[in-house]
Image (cartoon, helix red, strand yellow):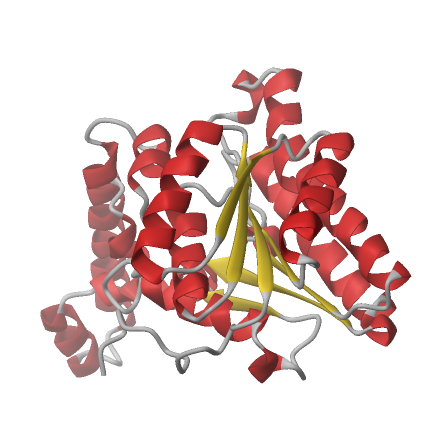
Length: 308
């Protein structure tokens, strides 16, 4: 089976209008393209209208389906409301919201200004609750079923150094997702999230890991399956969650990271770096406690040197 191929049958999203924040580039563009291939109408938003228009033209040329590009700063509630009204005017109703817009800095936290912290939290958390609240109110008022899918990250529940604003914001989005899944289910509104592992996009990864840092900190080295994700794999999962096939899935966060975060969480998972010869020696010397301890200390020292 080719995991870089589409998963759902043709027309699986026909008749649905899907609004994607951060839909002009990267993962948002990849997911939107697949949604359109499955028959959906798209509304894509970001602050860069020129980029949105180019993406809309590309997707329409590929799929033949309508794509509406709308400039919007997700941090501004009035702009969010305007986008929703324009979307309704074009398509009649919005059926699905994909909260995908994000921002991030990789930095020691003490080096960040409070404005930099605000920027990330406002885009990720405020932007997500702005669109979720505005669309949720509309769906409830008009008794229209809805579906909210938010892109979070595995460090939304583990936390992570050097991306503290993003971790705090994504944790908030995840808490909102789980809370509204319970509160709004009676209105026919489902809320779910996806926590992707490394799915490289040129723009974002060049900013986060400039120069030779991409080689030094190759994310594939941390993933048990030995590779990073293909965009189509994420698009397949997202398409399932925004489709009616997932009607009984509500309040879930689905991790798609090849086992990356679990590897980092396990106390002894780094033992995959132990050479076979050392395992053989340890097995043959079970009763030689002092000798094994010396070998183990030597191996730990070698690991530390490699990391430096």
